[in-house]
Length: 310
Image (cartoon, rainbow, N blue to C red; front, side):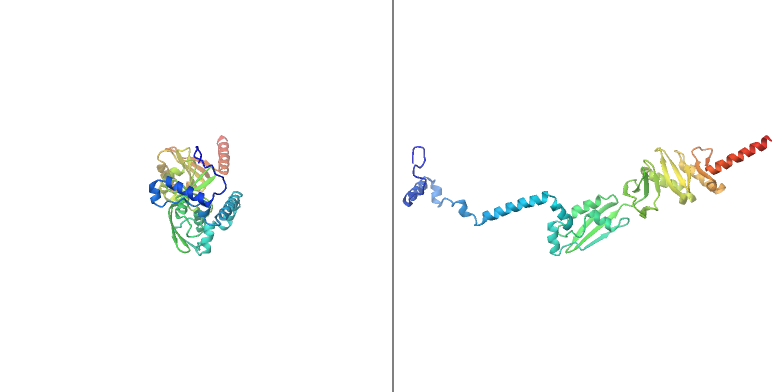
């Protein structure tokens, strides 16, 4: 060894005698604790690794690159959309596909709507269905107030839900929504399943639903003839009865409705050729006639004036 602590011998393999002397010299330099424990230098890494590991690692690298390209190209999403996730496919092949979904608590919704909201179809498998995620998706439906999801192996899913009770329809800006008793929008009007519900119209009418339903109750025998209520300027109601607009006052509209009930009972006022009754003044009723009735009344007044002047 030279003064710099380096071996000055050739780089080619040393003779056995020299190698033994070198190892012996190194061993003398080791601490006594390592010499007593039988410490020996480790074998080279390539001798300790299993044979063929490099080929396996190279194949795995190529497979990873291919998979990344498959996903990046969008073909993986198309495959999943058509056949389902690979784990679900494996579970279905093993006999754990979803073959039955039991749904309880349906009142206004259809089964197909619940399944679509839950994201459950023929591609789903029981083992890999995330019941927490399915429950969250169901609760995102405004009509569903609460829901629970259970797995029953090997092939069944059980959904139990409680729906919010629809109370009325609310029309605003040409769109009709289904609302609960507190005015919360819980669905959109897509078919005739909600056709029998009361209808309120106008901005803020949903928040005043309780007030409107109280007015209908106060209208007595006329309640069945009330078709809709329009909330005007955020202050008062106009009721639609058989094509006649009933304009109610902002204060004490129930008392005005009592006057209407009396007028209808005594004079059958709603049977006349009118299109509107204004009850906003406490001491009088303002009537608006149809165009035909207004023209006939004007003609009759002309004849009356001519007869009087002659």
